[in-house]
Image (cartoon, rainbow, N blue to C red; front, side, top):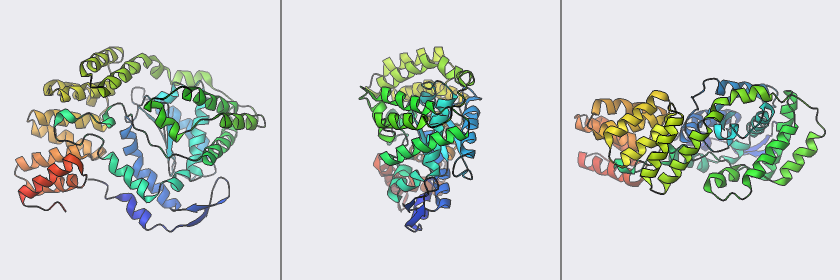
Length: 423
């Protein structure tokens, strides 16, 4: 079920006033309490992960390694009591982000850009400051939170035709969470993040190198791939210089390059496969489905256990109405990552197209337990209606009708035909 507009109830009851920034000690405008802040992060964490490719699962040891580094930094932060969590996302984009309450994610696309554990600590320390200093809570107004939540349930398509099932949520997680922090907040996170690094025993010069890396990545980049990234984390020579100035006054520390390189060995080995995937996604965007399919076949040969490759392959097959082939692809995706909602959603849609309603119902329901998408609920409503369960069908259609777009209109039409109101 769509999440009852969970955040609206919290923010409507919030009292606007001043609060002390836990990191700087300065008085700042606050829209949400500390308890509401934690609730925001917990409610949104999983669905934001799913929007961006889901958790990286090819190497079971990678997320625990990153989480251990993150928790070491969190323990020496100004808000060690927050329920910090860390996850590696299966996403090509070199990005990291923090939700209010200490829910932090880093993409495998950024991990392969870093050189050692100290640079990883620079990334995580920076994001921990965003959480500890309540930067996200300051930015996430009622409208921003609700807008994000509503958009997420629509990421898997807006039309009932299986051929339209080419949503960004399934295309390698191209979309990103962006808080668009201001210059002062970014500089604040750089500064205090370096302090956290030193408290945890890491080399502060790594934070300088991190900003230098981001400046290099931003130079000459005009694609949407980087535009969205640098909108949320704007690099600048100013940040490099300020980090360099601060690093001179801080004690040296550990780098742990060998341990870090061992931890990212699998994703580095798979870089050629992910490059083929990115080329395939670009081809899909241009409507070159045969080219995309061939590129995905190459990616699968290089790494046959990556679920995202099969999800993209299944998308193309659904688009081409090759439903049996799509079922095979999504079955593989589900086998390798059942926790990614696009695997079960795609499998359910492929089965539904072949009138395998029992199996389709099972997999569509599984997908909605992770992310409740209108397209899944629409087809679950249709399955219930065909089975004679009008009340269950109406319940699904009412939820879909609220999402708007083509699916919302189709659901409203179904309700009218059944004699139900869309309200």
